[in-house]
Amino acid sequence: MARYTGPSCKLCRREGEKLFLKGDRCYTDKCAFDRRPYPPGQHGQRRSKATEYGIRLREKQKVRRIYGVLERQFRKYFASADAGKGVTGEALLALLERRLDSVCYRLGFAATRSDGRQLVRHKHVLVNGKTVSIPSYLVRPNDTITIREKSRQKGRIVTALEGVERRGVPEWLSLDKGAFTGKVVSQPVREAITLPIKEQLIVEFYSR
Image (cartoon, rainbow, N blue to C red):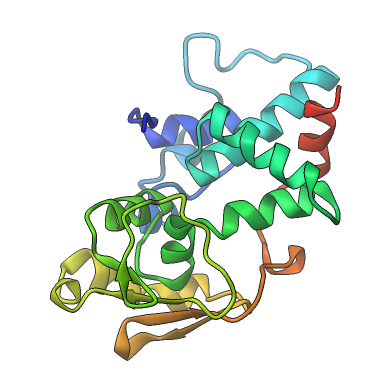
């Protein structure tokens, strides 16, 4: 499936806030957003007044970029959330959080969601003892996510796990760090998603 392969830092600058797309680098003085906190391009430093449509569009684009999802797939997630029970915006975020690449990131097996996607694609991840190579696979309560035995010595995985305390593991997941194993305790709830997201703006964007 197609995916964005350009500079990650440009996405943060375009959205006007850190999206933490480069892992630990985002916490250092090397962060491009800290150095140039304005949109990329020759007109990036111009002041422009955002319209109501523009505000909603930027919020939608921001969430897409955080989770590494392209427009067509994002629309499908929204349609699924809208068709289900409960609050549409919260249901949308829950679907995105349940993606296997995102869960690998949340458990600390990967430093970024992009790294989580690569782990899954390269068959380093088991779900309930079976290899799953689809990053968009949606986990369910009681699912067990494990790093394959042969992959546990990989430097990127070990380094990512060392930094998991800084990010923390959400309450709907549990981690056995020594066993390279995580478990889905429950469905993700809005309070456990600490990202600076205004999901109602996304609902309004698609409902216009």
